Structures are given as structure tokens and as C-alpha cells.
Amino acid sequence: MQILFPEIKPYARHNLAVDDTHTLYLEECGSRDGIPVLFVHGGPGAGCSTQDRRFFDPERYRIILFDQRGAGRSQPHAELENNTTQHLVSDIEAIREYLNIDQWVLFGGSWGSTLSLLYAQSYPEKVLGLVLRGVFLCREKDLTWFYQQGADRIFPDYWKDFVHPIPEAERGNMIEAFYRKLTASNEIAKMAAAKAWSIWEGRCATLRPNPEVVNSFADPHLALSLARIEAHYFIHQAFIQPNQILENMARLEKIPGIIIHGRYDMVCPLDNAVEVHRLWEEAELHIIRDAGHSSREPSIVDALVKATNDMSLRLSGDGDHTS
Image 1 (cartoon, rainbow, N blue to C red):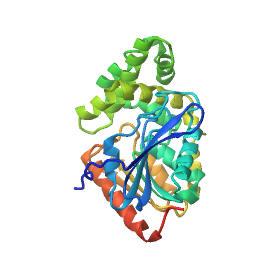
Image 2: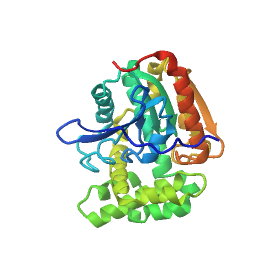
Image 3: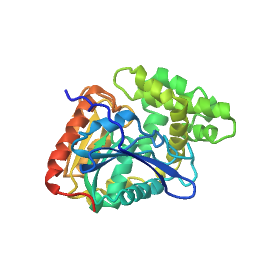
């Protein structure tokens, strides 16, 4: 069983202004001459943690992390203006250019897998490979499953707490109802809604109850950006066309991929990964039999560390990846 690599500190930090509103936080760890890999966090709105540096062998990889618009240490916090999928894809390309990287690996889980796939479909010539976890296609049925009807039948006790801030008459469209509260001026009601939204996700993310995961989702700073930005994206269908990712999978031809997905993922059900794999011959799909959605579950950690090690071995003969 593989575990995370030891804790590591960044050798460089950057603040990259991507427009008049948003400044992104970036950090670099590991080997300056290693294979460039971009960690693409979930949510949208979750931000990165110190654990996210540790899925990669620091002797093999130049590890790059960034907080997406409005998330983590990027500024302004929880900001929705100029915050769309298209902005985030452009931000990733801006980071690549800023760091003078020719090609790189993308590593993304949940929404991070969505964004990594969309970037790779937009800039396939810049992508050496993809390592994806808990694939999320952002289809209407995926949003309905988790926020309206589906996961509520698996976790009816958690669902009761999730819907509590929303009056019964407004529960016919939970995403819209939460969006109204999360964008209103009542700060107390906004934070209550944010914590209910975020804790629901944290509770459902692991196969076995994990208080550490739930507590991290309950943190007010994370909860506010996660809930506001997720609701903003999901009320707009993630700013993509229905089935957009699946319809453009041919653009990933010849790009190697490794997909890790928990058998009992209740946030992003397994059919998301199966559909992507069906249309992507160059990808491997590893279904983890004793895991849910979270990257903190031991079997998911094991599979992801193996995947990054495997990807580095595949790419180690490719020479210099900086321009």
C-alpha cells in the first residue's frame, strides 16, 4: 500500500494577476528540473492544501499548485465576477506561459478532473498526460443526483441537515435556492447556507465516516468559497454545453491517461469515469473497490501515488519539458 510522500515546502511562491479583479496564488515544489505537473483542485472553490503536494515524487516532478479564482489564497476570496470555466481554462494556460513550461501533466480530482479534461481538449498539444480522480462531467443528471434526487436516498440523515436552511416551498430546485442565499446580503444566513452545502459534500465524500474530512469542509473560509462558487457554476451548468466533454474526447487522442475512481463514489458516480474511458483509448481506468470520492481515503491515495509514479516512468525519456 502506497502512502503520501513526506511533507514538502514550496521552493517558490507567486501571485499572478490574471485580470483587473483576480490574482491567483501559485506555488512550486519538488525538483526544478522535474516533469512539470499541475495540481488542479476540486470544487470549484475548494482551494489547495499542503497534502496536495504529496501525491508526487519530489525528485521526479516539478510540482505546481494553484488556487483557482476566488478559492484558497487567491484574491478576492469567494468572488464570482469574471469567474467561469472559460476563465479558469485560460488561467491554466496563463500559468503555463508564466512559468515558461512547454508541456505538462495535469492531475485533477472531481471538479479538477472536469477542468483538466476541458483544458486538455482546448490545448492538447500542451498536455503530456492526465491523472484523474473521481471524474465529474457536470451533466444535468450529475448535478441532479447530488443536489436534488439520488444521493439523498443514500444519506437521508445528512440530507436533512443539508436542506435545513431552505424553506420547504423552495426545495424543488435546491441549487437555485442555495444560490439565492449564498449571493444575498444577509451574512449570517449566507454562512449558514455555505456550511450546510459544504458539510453535505464532506459527509458524502468518503466510504467510511471521516471526521477529519468533514471538519475541513466545515471550515468557514473553505465553506464560503466552495458553496458560493459551486452554486454559481452549477446554476449555469458549469458554463459548458451538455455532454461537451464526452463529445470532444477525440481531442485527447494519443494523450496517455490514468483514471482513478472509487466504486462507491456517491458525489460523482462511477458512470462518469466509465463514459470517459469508453471514449479514450489511451486511458487506463482503475476502479477502487473499497473507496468513495475523497482523495484522502487510503486506497485512493495508494492508487494515485502509483499513478503518478507510473506516469513519471512513461514520460522520463521525453527529455526537457521547459522551453
